[in-house]
Length: 89
Image 1 (cartoon, rainbow, N blue to C red):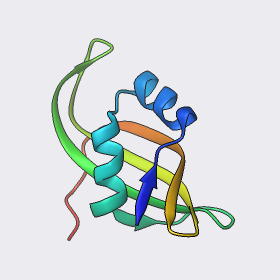
Image 2 (image 1 turned 90 degrees about the horizontal axis):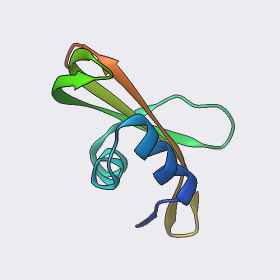
Image 3 (image 1 turned 180 degrees about the horizontal axis):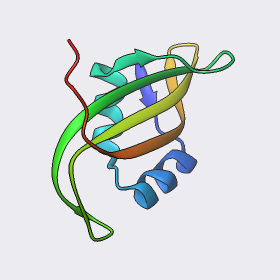
Image 4 (image 1 turned 120 degrees about the vertical axis):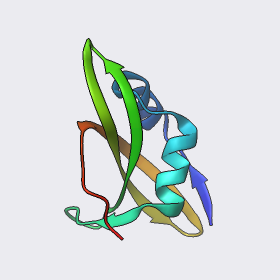
């Protein structure tokens, strides 16, 4: 299935500290998360171990919200959270 990253998603990614490659990785290998309506969502935690806005964070969690149109995943937005999470299998 193809992945089309909407410009809005790229704009939010830049603001929030995520890359286009990370967005694609979340869509491909992230875990499903609940979202409202007919949208879908996936999330993934990455080791970060650096400062963002003068605060050190061990990890960051990306959540990508998207829809499926025919044979294409179309992103809607990306959320990025900084902190520390337990690993899930």
